[in-house]
Image (tube, rainbow, N blue to C red):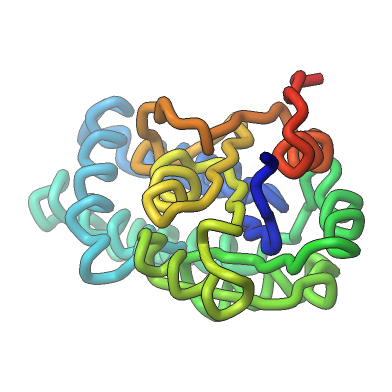
Length: 240
């Protein structure tokens, strides 16, 4: 017997619009600024370690990333980093907070199509003001029945969100580019976790794919309606 699906959650960054590309560009600038002190590989490893260490304090997003860059610059120069370099890192962070929003292929069409039959909710984490800005500039805001900007994506949060906006996580589906944040905790809450790969994904968001009947991978958001049809009819999904 087919399962019942009532509510669909969409991740935002690198699922609906490009985001990680701006982090990648800023990381390159960061390593260039500090190239006299460490090689690129060492700088990237130290920066990632700082980001991991700071997540409990600053959370996800550009502001925490900027502070982690500054912290790493101080560490690798043993406190001798010039004020001009700190200023350039701050400028880079501000630039990231003002970049234009570019939708990924099929984002609008897929949401519009699915919103006729399901409740659709955007579920994202990061800086509140930045996520609100991107959502407004994307032109997608009015398509959603609910908007959730949270500090971390956990099974408990997905349970709360799908209870509030739908009929429970077991009748909910979450789609996104992060195995660690969009897929695994949603399956842990009893729902479907749909992975849509993006060419650039932050290392912290990587995790092994689960072996679970409620896990699926699609090539792009354009494949989501066909997959959902198979979930609700009992047919077999064939990726395009």
